[in-house]
Amino acid sequence: MPIRTLDDLDVAGKRVLVRVDYNVPLDDGRITDDTRIRATLPTIQALRERGAAIILVSHLGRPKGKVREELRLAPVAARLGELLGEPVKYARDVVGPEAQAMASSLQPGGVGLLENVRFEPGEEANDPEFARQLASLADCYVNDAFGAAHRAHASTTAVADLLPSAAGLLMQREIAALTKVLESPEHPAALILGGAKVSDKVGVIEHLLDRVDLLLLGGGMANTFLKAEGFPVGRSLVEDDKLDVARATLDRARERGVTVLLPVDVVVAPRLENDAPTRIVPVEQVGDDDAIYDIGPQTVARFAEALRSARTVVWNGPMGVFEVPAFAAGTRGVAEAVASCEGFTLIGGGDSVAAVEQMGLADRVSHISTGGGASLEFLEGKDLPGVAVLRKKE
Ligand code: ADP
Ligand code: MG
Image (cartoon, rainbow, N blue to C red; front, side):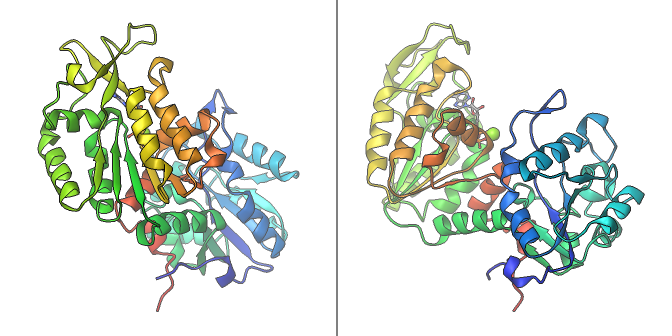
């Protein structure tokens, strides 16, 4: 069932409560990356053009239901004002007197930001009374916080049933891209998985295995697969309790005719340090004192070759410990291959997205998901609570 969009809402002259994801990285009160704020500008502009007054609500960090001075949203209101080119009102509470005064003072086209919604214990508890207080500030509700859609919280789910509600443009774009790769991927389709652990990714493999033609495995999780295939892994990160899962996954993939590529060479070191002595070795030759921290150049070349003709690519999880320059080449090589691919390419996952942005390749990818955990759960086939409440009713 499709979701409701801005076209399904009549917002002219109305006050619209807009859930956004302004969970930005802060360093001593300064915003170090404003991507998430910029990502909401299209929805804010669209609502302003339609004559709405906009009341923004977001979480920041994990204050656990208490006011934490360092997690106030004042710096976000200031930055948003700079981006919009006009001041943004800011209330120092979520549903209290300042919030109410701000909501009622907003003129059509005006923009205000409520305080960090997680200062309120009712938020994470999905408390109906708190949701009612939030809803009382506005006439309609728009959810543009895809990154929080996997949480059933008051500002992402309960409030949506209390007001006429719809998805914002960012939410709509995320759902469209993820739905496309799940429901109608062009073939050949490739799934690239990496990152730290198999246990974080089994759900995605399970759900996507029937939909892809190629499965490329790298990163720490590939170690468990290598060990399951009988290769030596030395002191690498391995999940011994997932060896069975790895074997079963490989069997199933082969049964279904999915081509699985595991690393054929790896970068090893005795310890995780940038200046540790590193070696590139074939996977048969990982020593007892070696730990695998990246895929090797031959593996990158094989992965790149496989991706060249792909019409759909889904990538989650870095190929190595890319945070350490000595172990970043594998992730960079695969990122370049994904960027060069002419098919539809999608990258999800907090660290994977950070890696691709850091490497300056993000604008050559079809869709970069802003939701780390949310995009993973979507790829696992879960019905995200924040999305389910926006679905059209029959
Ligand atoms: P994402 O956030 O994109 O979903 P994950 O959180 O699953 O990705 O994994 C990212 C982490 O995996 C990174 O911090 C990276 O250092 C780590 N990692 C990748 N390869 C290895 C490896 N070979 N050994 C240990 N850690 C690894
Ligand atoms: Mg991560």
